[in-house]
Image (cartoon, rainbow over all chains, first blue to last red; front, side, top):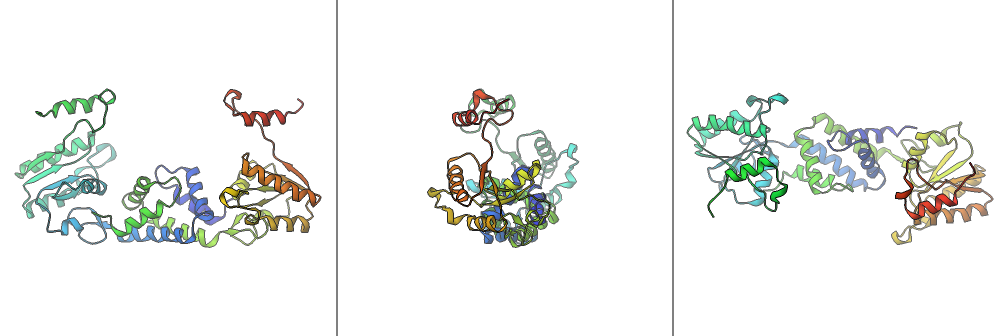
Amino acid sequence: MKYPDSLDKLIKGFSKYPGIGPKTAERLAFYTITKMDKEEALDLSDALKDAVNNIKECKICGLITDNDICSICASNDRTNELMIVESSRDVIAFEAIGSFKGKYHVLGGVISPLNGVGPDDLNIPKLLKRIKEENIKDVIIALSANIPSETTALYLKSILEAMDVNVYRIGYGLPVGANIEYLDEITLSKALEGKKKM
Amino acid sequence: MKYPDSLDKLIKGFSKYPGIGPKTAERLAFYTITKMDKEEALDLSDALKDAVNNIKECKICGLITDNDICSICASNDRTNELMIVESSRDVIAFEAIGSFKGKYHVLGGVISPLNGVGPDDLNIPKLLKRIKEENIKDVIIALSANIPSETTALYLKSILEAMDVNVYRIGYGLPVGANIEYLDEITLSKALEGKKKM
C-alpha cells in the first residue's frame, strides 16, 4: 500500500530539511492532515511562499530583510562602528543583547577552501566599498571560534588594516556558567591569552 | 530588532508542530530562506496546500485517501476479515508486513474520558453499519497496549459479540529482540497469559 500522492509529496518536502529524517517527516505530515487546523496548514503554506518570494538581502549589509535596505542600515541612530558577522542570525543574537550601537555587515559564510568557498564568494566587495564610502574607522570581527572563521578573520584583518581601519575581534574565553574542568584545551588557552587585570 | 514579517510568520508556522520548539522553528525558517532551493520551498508550500485540500477519510473505513473510497476498500482481492485500528498509520504499518489479507476500519482515536473522547466521537457507527452490510463475521482488534485502548477494545468486544461476530485481538507479549530483565511487569504478565505450547 502506498500513501496518497499528496501525503507522499508532503513527507518528501519535510525531509529536505537537515535534522528531519524520513520518520520525523512522516510524523509531521500526518500531524498536518490529521491534527492540525486546516487554516494553520494553509498559513504555513503561504508563509513558505511569501518568505522565499519576499525576503532578500539588504543591499548595503547583506542582512535578511523585507525591503531593499534593512532597518539597521536605514536607521540614523547607529554609530559608525561596524561589526562583521557570518550570518543574519548572528545579527539577531547581538541585537537581542542590545549593547552594540553600530551597524553590521553580513558575510554570508566564511572562507573554507575544503567547501570551495573563497573570499570572492562572500559579501566582501560591498564591505570594502562601504568602509570607504561611509568612512568607517573601527571594525569588530565577530566570527565563531573555529578554523575557517579564524582564517576569514585573518584575511579581513590584513586587507582592512591596509585601508587604515582599526580591526578588533570579540573576546574569546570561558563562556559564562562554564566549568573549567569540562572545557576544551583551545578554549582554555584562548582564555589564558585573554587574561585581564581585575 | 525584529525579524522581517514573512520570516516571523514562517517561524510561527513551523512552531505549531509538536516537537518543534521556537529554536528549531527558527533554524528551519532560516534554512528555508538561506540554504534551500527556492523551488524546494515552493514545492513544500504546494504540498501543504494540496495535502490539506485533497486528503480525506475513506467513506467506508476512515483511512486517509485521495479519493472517496480508499484502495483497500475498493479492492476485490481482500477477504471479509476486518481489522480495527486506531489510526491510518497503523494500517500502513500492517500493510508493510503484508500478511493480513482482510480489510481495515480506522477508529480515528480511542475512548478516553479524561480527554473528553467518548464512543460517539469515534468512527464506530460506520463500523456497525458495514459489519451488517458486508456480513462480517471475524474482527481483529489491533489497538495499542494501554488503558484507553484496552477500554475501547472491551467496549467494542461487548457490542460486536452482541452482533454475533467473532472478536479477536492481536497477541500481547515480548517484542522480538527484547531482553526479559528490562521489560515492564505488565508486558511480562501479558506474555505469561499468552503462553503457547511449543
